Length: 472
Picture (cartoon, rainbow, N blue to C red):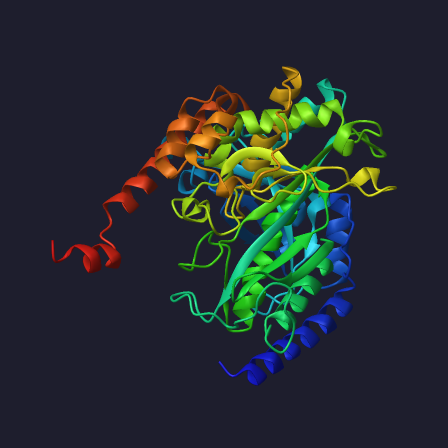
C-alpha cells in the first residue's frame, strides 16, 4: 500500500463526508424526540432509506431498510420480520417478530449508502401481540437498569476504550503501519483514518474523548465519552460499525478481534463504570474515604470481583478472547483490584480534585467483541450483588501480579479468570446471577452456541499442529 495514495484517498473521503454532513445539517446529532420529528426531518432532507437496527444475542448488529412511505406505519404498527433467522431469537414454529423504531435514536448515516440518503434508528423488538420480547438484548439491559431505582440510584455511566487493528484486507492480518503507543505521523498512517472515523461518530451524535495509536503495530483506539449505559450500548454498536465501514470505504479492514497477531498485544475494551444517585451526585465518590471510593463503590467493586469468573463468558465470549487474556501482553488475568497497578483485573483511576463526577472503576478484562447490552447488564448485576450483600472489597493489590508465582498468588487468595472458553462456559452454566439477569432462554442459547464454538476450534487441526506433530 502506497501511504501517499492511501492518505490522499482518506482526505478525499473526509472532504466528501464533510460536505454531505453539512448538507444534511446533522453534525453533532439530530436530537429528535418524537415520530413526528423523524418524519418531518426525512421529508425536509430527502431521506430515501430508513435503516432499523437491532442486535442478536452474540452482539452482531442486524439491519433492514424501509422506504420513507412506510415510516409512519412503522412507528404505529411496527415492521414484521422472521425471528427464527436471528441468532438467539424465536424458534421456527413461533418465528414472527415485530420491530418498532425508537424515534429518539434517529441519526443520519454520515455518508450515502448505495446512493441513498439514510438514517438509522434502533428498534424495540416485540412479539406479534405487542408485548416486549424478553430475549432482545436491548430489553435485557433495560430490565437490569430498572434495578438501579430500587437501590436509590438514577443511572449507570459507562465509558469504553475499544481497541482495534487496521489490516490491508479481511483475509490476512497484514499491518498497515509499524507505529507504537502514542506515535504520530508519518509512522502512524492510520491517524487520518481515525480522524475521519471520529468525524463520522460525532456527526451521529456520539462524542469522542480520545483517539490514538496503541502499543502494537497497526493497533488503534478511539474512546467514547461516558454516557448512560443504554445510550452507550447503542453508541458502542454504532461505533464498531462506523470504524469498520469507514475503513472499508478507504480500502482497508478494521477488526476488533481480541488477538489477531501472534506475539503482539491483543485488543481489549477497558470499561469505566460509575453509578449516580442523580445527574449531579456520583455515588462512587467519597470525600473522606481512602482512594476517594465510597462504601457503595467498594461493595460494587467487590461484587464484580466475586462474579468475574462467571461473567467472563459474557464480557469475553469468543474462543479467541482467551488468547488475549494471558500473562505478558498487558492483559488482565488475575482477579484483584488496585489504584495504579495495571496488572489487576479492576483499576481505580486516580482522583483529581474537583472531578468528583469522574470517580469510577475501570474493568480491564472485557473486549469489544462482547454484546454490549448483555455485558453491561452482567456487570451491573455483579456490582449490585456485591452492594446487596455489602460485600467487603479485598485490600488493593500493590504488587505486580505477573511476577508472582502460583503459590504466592494462592497464599494471597488471588484467583484467575477462566483459562479458555470451555472453562468460562462451565463457570457460566452454574451462575444464578447470569440466569436471573439475562434470562433462562438467553443463557440456554448462549451456552449451546458457545459450546459449539469451543468444539469447532478444539477439533480444528491448525498449521501449528501439522508443523509440530507431523514427525511424531
